[in-house]
Length: 185
Image 1 (tube, rainbow, N blue to C red):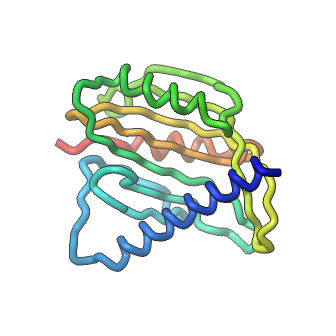
Image 2 (image 1 turned 45 degrees about the vertical axis):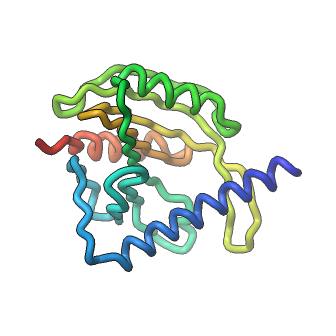
């Protein structure tokens, strides 16, 4: 019970942080945020450019109806790092990932290239916390695909997340989105 409450508090904190970021971005229209990469999401997705580093980009599939409460999403993080390369960046983040309580298992790891940029990909199972409108909580099984890039002393990780039962249906959408990712010159 204590562990579920801890996860619930962490999940609430994450949701509040995301809400604060989105609200502050929407209120701060004077400062134009420019990303150093391009990415395109489908028309039925909503996206937000959040910052120039840290949690920089967020997108999710639009809600279809009131029962559509767990939607696929994408998050992109960028962190400036001196003395790293793609392999050391991936190794450091992967070590942290494997130590998380919600990590379940790795499904696949692969070196890949996206639009000329070297990348590492890991697909893994994790458990997430779902909170419904009545504030009831339950675990949900997720499959996450993370792509890692290292460009101009910056580490980037792009995370595509879906419920495990919809993963194979949504994977082509994720593949189409990552195919549009490219760094600007």
